Image (cartoon, rainbow, N blue to C red; front, side, top):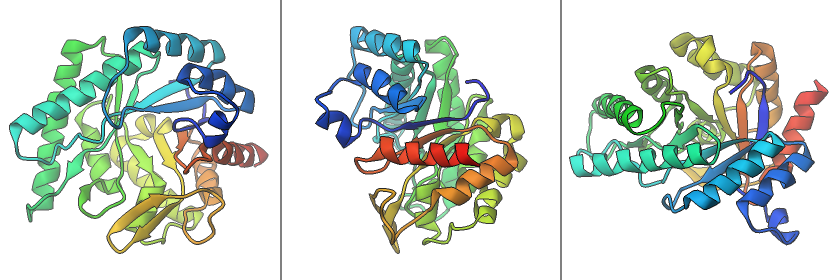
Length: 285
């Protein structure tokens, strides 16, 4: 991934379907015409894509210059002590990496796991880190090595995925890069992610722990999310005025730090229009 900031949606917006389109390969031109240059495909319910479809998607996105990434199945849980479940998680991510490579991309976002019934949270984090190191060996043995695994910051206290935990997991290998989901972080912080300094604190923590090179083109998810005391409830749109976070201080923070992330919007049905709004704001300042 070049050091160029990219903006794009996660999946297809309601408007995409309203205009009579329905195939992912059609999204490449649709997104490009809007002026966007990134796109994330979700394998949340499992990797069920044939090579012919993946190749068609790869050709379409390559022609339009759109960087494509993927989200691994939600079933991944490296916090589970059951070794059979760990093996399944390895396979889910391996399948996702192989699929996104066929689709012309190399980034895969993953949920690391949950704390479960264990009282020692740090022990779970350490175990997950070891499983990620094992995953890297599996991926190296079964792919061409051109991949980036992105552990995601999570929106519920029960999940392993504070930004500090995610940064620590990313020490496993050069190809393990954070997916910083600021909507999730805002849920955990109960709406306290507000100012440029708030965003800078998170990003500077990543730079301190992982180095500028890894953080330069970090993966970002951004959208407003409704939350309760337990954390995330549901994704909203940028039009919501009750829940955050707002994108302006985030944009100002990455400009201040001269970072060039891939920014993916996961708004509920308006993701392409919302991320275009953010991109226009970025370009205006």
